[in-house]
Length: 438
Image (cartoon, rainbow, N blue to C red; front, top):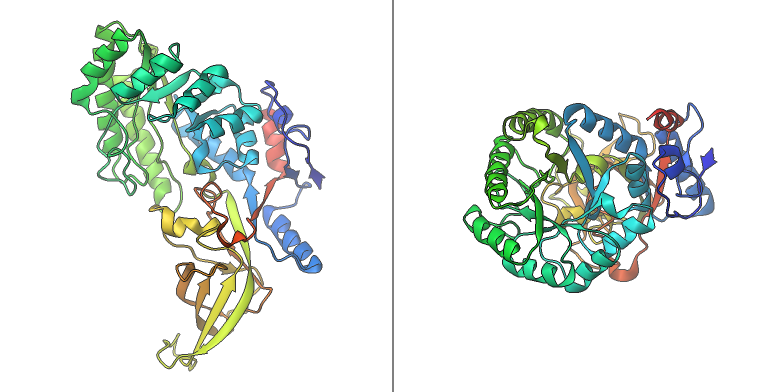
């Protein structure tokens, strides 16, 4: 097994293998024929032999690569700027940098991280419409010029602290068909656009484009078509006032988990059709998007260990397939929870449940018990799942949770000072060789 172990260094070399070389990042590259599951099994075996029961992630970067290829196939005109807020692990940023994506940063800290990992300033959009003044000054000092706004006061701040910025006007669009709605907080209403453009003109600021976000978990592709149509209206108005408009940012909210694969294909068709209608290829407008969970949601598997166990006698416990075990209820406590990696259960409307599964082999005839699984903290809110039917577990057994790459690492806390899950990034040899040809 080949292992890259050095810290990232700043480089402008766009070769995928150069970016992911041992001098730049910490990624394990598997021997030919070895799978991600082999890697996970070995990791658990190693931890068992050393008594290490801390949680960890396996970051399957093959998934990130395959998602990128799928995007290029379905949305070839749309350049991706990965939303760092979704997953700020260095290996993910380095992988996407190797694929020549851009990066959507929402703060000074995210900009610092991207720059420290070799991302060049021209590959960053500072995509937050209400920025602290010190963060604007930091962006200016480090050559990050592309940034969003949606109100007059923000224009005044930018005029004072970054007057040469290239500005993208974020507009409010219909997000009523989305699980996570953003337009109540961000985006200028269409009836305020002319006044904003006049204010920018008065301040001698350079507006070059329009952005929007239809919300996460959108269920209706027509929201994209209407938003792109609205953006065309703003482009025409800005063009008539002398602005040189050349960028459209269609935001994020894309997913491929569950039933979303078919939805993504449908959305891509709608987006492509709307772009051809309102922003045809020969119009000179660059199209970009800010996908986050699309790239990483299925790339991370969380491995957690059973720390403690209690057997409750509960005459009200339910039967399972007629088994006479109704008086027994199993209670387990694992080493990660809703204040850690599983924070999605309380923070992410698009990911409100998880289904842990056993790492060890289980005989299909093995008796199952009604169970509840708690996280490790002292808070009773820290519950993972209840009324969960599984075979009896023992302290030291491992449970796995898939699809844990989006808004998990970046939102977890240090409540009760439990250790954060280690991230173990890995590539198969097949993907490593494919990157060499990319």
